[in-house]
Length: 172
Ligand SMILES: Cc1cc2nc3c(=O)[nH]c(=O)nc-3n(C[C@H](O)[C@H](O)[C@H](O)COP(=O)(O)O)c2cc1C
Image (cartoon, rainbow, N blue to C red; front, side):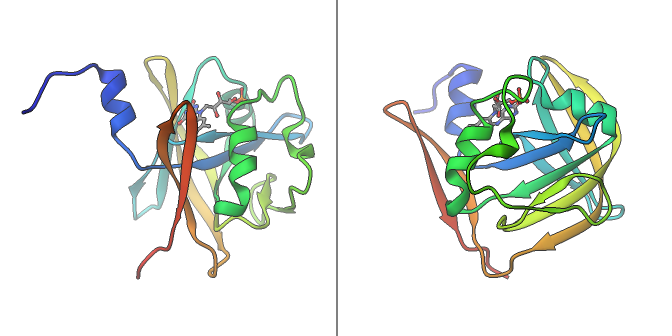
């Protein structure tokens, strides 16, 4: 039987959820970023992506300054990076010094791409929208890079306090 539940429980049940790395740079070109699940495609023409970042975090300051960001879509091999970027703060730690994390320069925006990610979307900032305790960033995609052989990591939720991720193969 259908029951009324809290929003928090509903958000937790609304899984699997995508997970991406949202990357940007400060005014000196130093990169940082964070993990985000609240990401969506919003337009084909022009191609737009939106991502919702909490106000108390660090990454949104970089996006506001640089007016650009990269959305890197991870796979299973990047699960530890996803957890690291999702549990540490860029104003306290250099996230890009994570052991073994390989990057390549962006082709359009001055932000590193994750070399072994399944997809890297380079975006220029179109709009920032205040959304409660988050800021929603709408970005125009100016280039996309793919590792066609790689799969896509999804966040399944938590079991006994531990986040569970699973990799899926996209069908065309
Ligand atoms: C799987 C996962 C998904 C997350 N999704 C979001 C999200 O959509 N939006 C958000 O603001 N934070 C999200 N977070 C939390 C941030 O990644 C986390 O607070 C991070 O430490 C912020 O880093 P920063 O302070 O360097 O920006 C997520 C964390 C994980 C592990």
